[in-house]
Amino acid sequence: MRESKLTEMVKGITPHEFRRFGEFLNSPFHNKSRKVIQLYELINSNYQEFDANVITNEKIAKSVFSEEGNKDQNVRTLISTFTSLLEEFLILLEIDRNKVQGKIFLLRSLRDRNIQKTFDMTSKEIIEINKKDFNRNTDFYYNDLIFKETALDYHGEDLDLDLDKSYLDMSDIADYLFIVTKLKGLNSVISRKILSGVNIYKRFWGVENILNYIEKKIDIIETNHPIIYSEYKILMMVLEPDREKHFHDLEKQVFNNITKYNEDELEQVYYSLSNYCINRIALGEEKFLTELHKIHTNFERTGFYEKNKNLQYTDFIGVIICGLTMKQMKWVNYFFETYKGNISSEVKRDTINLSSALIAFSLKKYRECIGHLNKIGYKYTYFYMKSKETLIRVYYELGELESMEAVIDAAKHYLKRHRETLSIHYDRYVLFFNYVMSLSRLDKKKKTEIKILMKKLDENRTTIAREWLIEKIIELK
Image (cartoon, rainbow, N blue to C red):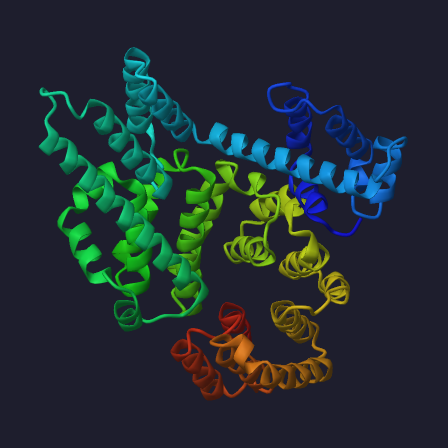
């Protein structure tokens, strides 16, 4: 059996979900076919190594249809039925996760059957759930709009009902649904592309109107519509990067409500806050190192990294580098040991080796650092450049200047071949290579040359490893 829809779906759900699916299939309400259960049991017995090569169509035919004719057609029909039931199960899981949506489906059923008391009780339950929901995102406003529409449809003939207010409420909800959807779409595009404020206003309709609307009602938005407020601040951090107020406003809101965000919304604000700090640090604004470390530690306390079983290499190494720069070795060791098992499997080995090399360098264990660096592959430019940068610093510390110059030469050639990929980091690395070479050739007795190099570093605050370069110049003094 090739990589079919069945294989893809079974491999795409968790072991816990697969067990629950077995309970689903054993309910006569959902499934009355014994052969479907037989197929489930066959898959379950091979679940750990399940794929199209382990459970072939021939194996299914032999196990389930051993005494029947036209086995090929029977197997195809059985697989189709099985996957359809799995789709129904996944729909039920989504309804179970979205309590309000499930109650709205119930509400529609009650409306159609004119079951008024239960309809009113369910309506009150929805209202109470919505009052407490912090994560007022696209799903929230969409569900609220459908709820209000369903309730109005049922009670529309009630003469005591204030129809004007009801329709005004629905109009407001529709506005918020549009605003949050638009902001999320914009921020998603911006996170993947470098866009200027001018481009955003030109390419995307309604941005200026949305921002004006939010700014006029900013206090209400912040209090009653926290996700819209978050998305607004995320967008403004891009449109007005020099106004630190947007960053601090978002940081304050997030830290005050960090346990209220759901996983998706928490991830959104985490990356937005972190990337803003990283960009400012790259521009030489070292105070944002403290802010970045604060983000890492606050999010760690919420279980953010623990829940993320597919940590990206840039995120993991970013936490390590920030902690080492802040000289928080205890935190670095704790983070490394606690979450290294959560690194994305594709680059886990390289990420662990690069992190270990950086830790060893910080502890002045230079030979150990080289050992870790030698084990790193170069699938991504990040690993190559970070490894070479670290190796250059190691050779300088060891006084092995010929080896250092050979690495710089090789890295420069690599840099030229990958100029487009490295983008803004190209110039930062060129500065680093040039300053290291200048540093290695400085004469301690020539104080003027030392002052000139320090002045250049002060002017070029985006230089890679600038703090280390300054430290080495001070040592020369």
